[in-house]
Length: 146
View 1 (cartoon, rainbow, N blue to C red):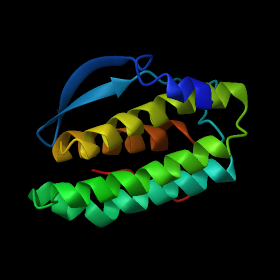
View 2: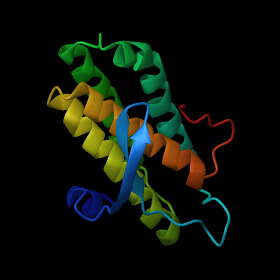
View 3: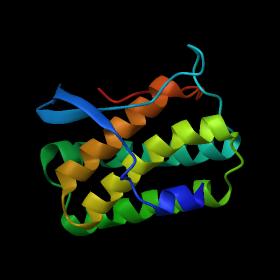
View 4: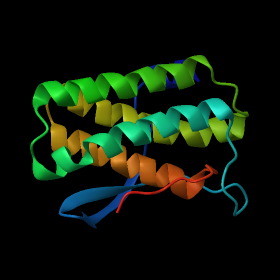
């Protein structure tokens, strides 16, 4: 998994775009597990819960345009810690891992944008990836963003 993620997000395919709260939304190419959500492991759930919590804690400032660039970089650092944790502790089955790569790649793209000071782009990318995660992966109590 670490090797594939080190290659970057060039393998992530985006399909047609449509609006979401005034932002463009790329549709990630992820498939269900024979019509069912993918089942990950506790490390995936722990990391994704923490990333979700970081975004929830900063969502008002992001929507209001008041999240400062230095604060956005702190958000990016917090999310990167969770990405590192999930990569280092990955024990997912190959089929699950392949689908999860798409989500992680998008989160990484969002982190890169936040680090570059592109707050809106980074936040939207991460939120879209989190929403896709909730749509395709089992995660008890998961709440998507509106």
